[in-house]
Length: 470
Image (tube, rainbow, N blue to C red; front, top):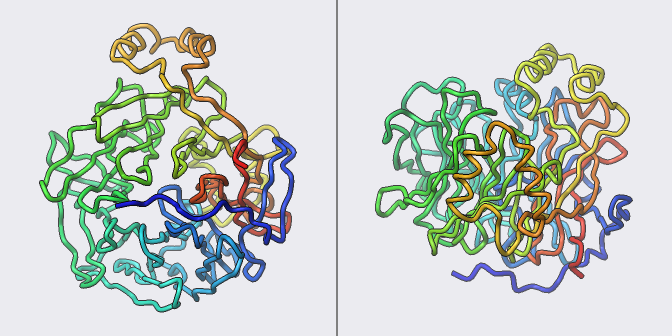
């Protein structure tokens, strides 16, 4: 299946708001409409573009209240002309789930565009323990509500390559997981829920998350797996790819030594590679590229303290990988500090003094940077010997390895700043909302698309030109 982009290069002359980034000098333009104040881009693994390059889709909200978007609706924007399509209102988060969504960042925008159609799929949690899925056609505005044959307290929005299913895991709460967790799929035509496998095939149960169907092969689905006995931010994580027809996992993920960890992974647009972000104790990070055709793994390290990113996303043409870098990130803070912040949220105390006290000693310039990561032709960590040497020499003292990377930069990831953007923490109104840009790349591989906040205390969706792409 050919999923390459065949449209023309995008320029966004129609954008009404723009700036020249003071950090890099690059062009940055606003894609979201003025008609709705709070606009969200999508989570890193959720597709937000039609693959013909025509539309970008985002969620709007009339207001922010108690840490959650209220008055939600869906918009599509023609990438070439700027023409807007109002796709209508979607259900708000029910009162019974407000606390849960608020504690996990407030962005209730779980939606995805179909890989090879003009349908938008939006989760509908209006019934706490029986979520549904909305399917909305961009061209006609026609919509239907798909109700699972058995009640589920969570549904994912990413469809399979053939548009027939969405996949998700239940139960989902990693802190309450005791034993069995099921991986299921929902048939989008019949509503039938089919149980595919569970998490008990190995010596002990593992926690599954991030269901991620292959964009070209409907028979393959990827999910993240974690050790539930260890706290989420310190857990060893890996991925599994399931061959649904054969009923087994592919033997392709060969784990590096135990000190490495990772949480964010996704397919390339052709479905034959996986890109994954790994890190070591938050001291440095790698990009792991897995080639399914060759059954080959390559780890590409980044020079420490340079361009650290939480999420990564490969451009459709794979010439670079986009990332979002933090001056600070409260999700990377020690657990006890984050819990103190949560206590204030739960008490309804959203004063900025608490958040800035816990987040940073510098209250004057909170911000994040969009980074471009370019992989070298050859990596310094390309052989098993290199991993053995790393394990023997550097696990107790990373600084000699840091020096090795700095002395061999041509064998490490090249990091280029794309633009500086505003965090979500500009005012009391934004406190407690997720501090993530959720950066994507346009289908022509020339612009990074991300969420930011405006000087008017609104969420907006922006696009920044990738350096060297004219």
